[in-house]
Amino acid sequence: MGVGVSDWRLARAVSRCGQLGVVSGTALASVLVRRLQTGDTAGDVRRALEACPLREEAQVVLQRYWCPSGLPVGTPFAATPMPRLDAGKFWTGLTILAAFVEVYLAKENHDGIVGINLLEKIQLPTLPTLLGAMLAGVDYVLMGAGIPRAIPGALDRLARHEVAHLSLDLVGETKGAEEMSLNPAEWLPVETDLRRPRFLAIVSTHVLAISLARKASGRVDGFVVEGWTSGGHNAPPRGASSGHNKPLAYGPRDEINLGAMRRLDRPFWLAGSFASADRLAQARAAGAQGVQLGTAFAFCAESGITPELKAQAIARSRNGELRVETAPPRFPHRTPL
Image (cartoon, rainbow, N blue to C red; front, side):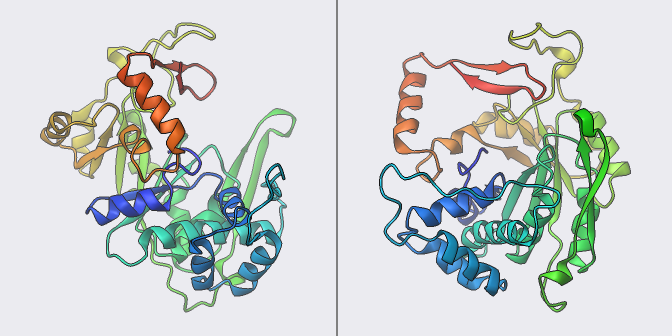
């Protein structure tokens, strides 16, 4: 749910209520660095770093980025290295640490379950993020925004302390096949527990769910099925669209085939306008395990959105002034107007 919106505080609150709390895995290295540069006044990040087995890497990150009094007003944040195929050990270690910190804090001092949400279309940080999350004991990995066929197998290999591989999708002049890999043995002793989390694929059609269930590199443990009103839905309409820079026209062909989902005999959750008791009951009656909520949690007290932005959006919604449309770039997204 966006960079730093579904952060460890929100995931922890949901998990302690007995549900699956999910942290956003997007840009976690930048989030970690900025928290340190704004002082980490409560000491949460430093406490999590102290618990991480990557002691040397944690000390380097603290020495480079922690500002005990916070950056002076007007001072720009120090940048993190850009993700690259050859980014090197510092970037990889920072990414592992960032994922560990987020999951560790979300799971701290309770027995609830916690997941991490990654995007298939952001590939370079994926393997070190998975390793860091597993090191912190993450219970679920969720991934959408593409076809995450290789992720179940990568989780299997990381859990066995084997080298995990991920093919990268290249476009433009560099279009072709490239591969990145990560060897847990280069970072952790072999006796370190890396329990394999369950994997939930985020899909928008039953066709993709069937394909992943049959052809993924390892077991897909379930599915989150996002209808087109879901904020995370990025599939274009089936059939004709409304044209460039115009709202996309979804219709009956975009409805989820729930019968096909039930026949897969794997748990699934429904998303997209399900934030009510009636809609939850409908989802369960249709065979779903439950529902996924995003927008409702984005505006709760524990989310990472600033209180000022939350108040402004809620006020505009109550006044009937807030309108959200689906914008039609390569990956359609929701745009508040």
